[in-house]
Every structure is written in C-alpha cells, then in structure tokens.
Length: 141
Image (tube, rainbow, N blue to C red; front, top):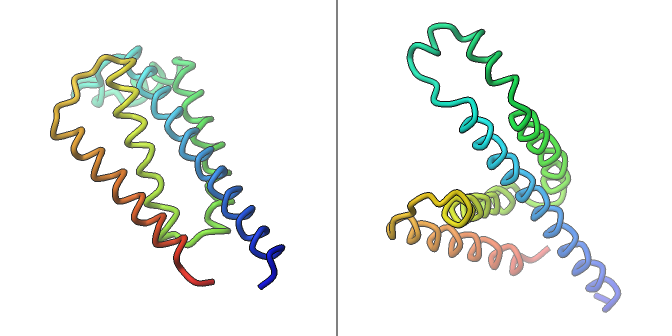
C-alpha cells in the first residue's frame, strides 16, 4: 500500500476519533444539564408519580431539561456518523468515557462524594476502553 493510502487511513482514524469524542462530550453535557434540571425540579416521589401529567409539566418548565435533551439529540447525530465508520463492538465501549467524565465532574464541580471503590471502577473502565481501542487499531482491514 502506498504511503498516501496509509495517510488517508490515518486521517480517517483521527477524524472518526474526533467525531466520537464530540458525540461522547455532548452526551456528557446532556447528562449534566439533565441532572441540573432535576435538581431544580426536586425529588420525584410516589405522590408525584400518582399525578404524572402535573409532574411532567413541572419538569417541562425547566429550561435545562430541554437543553440536555437537545445535547443528546445532537450527540445522536454525531453517533450515527461514528456507527457508519466503526464496528459497534468498538464504538459502544467508547461511550464509557462519558461515565468517566461524569464521575470527575460530579466530584470536582458538584462536590459529590466519590468513594475509592468507584474510582477503581473508573480505572477499570478506562483500561477497558484502552484495550478495545488497541484491538481496533491492530485489526487488519
């Protein structure tokens, strides 16, 4: 194969990786916005579930809910591009990075307590994503 072909493959790999990162980042942003919205709405208890329409209306008045859903929709568009380029067995495990981002954000900005066992889980997720990525990079085309 010519070096030009290898360069094109490398460019395709990096652009796909960037699109995947954008998709995961938008999904992460959507999660953060949805959490902020629901913190504002408050806990939905059994009594709220007894009147689902008024509970849904209360949530629907929260702009961050709509922002979060919008971010998820845009993330899905990028995700479709990723799925057109990469096997699902490679793409989907990469979504696990959103869990890493959420734990970091929750600890640093929301000041949630993150126990050591959860940090260990984050390390396991990152290791698994790295192994999947390495296996994809070594798969012959």
